Image (cartoon, rainbow, N blue to C red):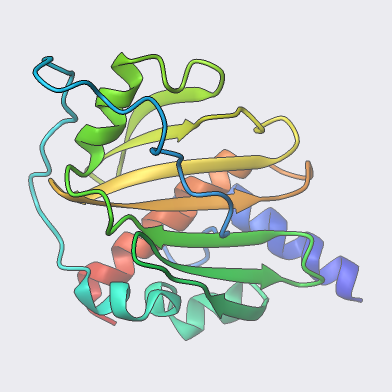
Length: 199
């Protein structure tokens, strides 16, 4: 029963891309590594697109597990959640069904430059062994990014800017069963929807 329930939740997580209720969920996953190959001072680096409609995420930074509403968690068969924050990241991790899928969200509070930092690191080759793929999520600048490419095994990280100096990571780990990057996108859309509504 648990296995069937988890499989159904994974289909919903990775298969929905409408931005409506019934989307993907977040996994904790490894936050984007920004501690190596620091951009050198004085050099001009590529900048991320500006955020046109900044969001106030202070409520969710204080309580990252509220980034998904109770109804969203019920829809996706969330069985547990765990906050695991530190001075650089405010984060929450969820488990779905039997725990084979674990989505999470983290607010990168320790990176004052926001998404610009990730773009600058890309100019240094920091992501060369991983991936760096700019995109847009619900009108907000975003980038699929990680220092090691584990998308094949079912891990994906998506960084989404909600202001010019703050982004959150939507990370999904599916253990190879499902489209983790589509799920991460759906998670990000759900988080933006929650923040906009102020739930």
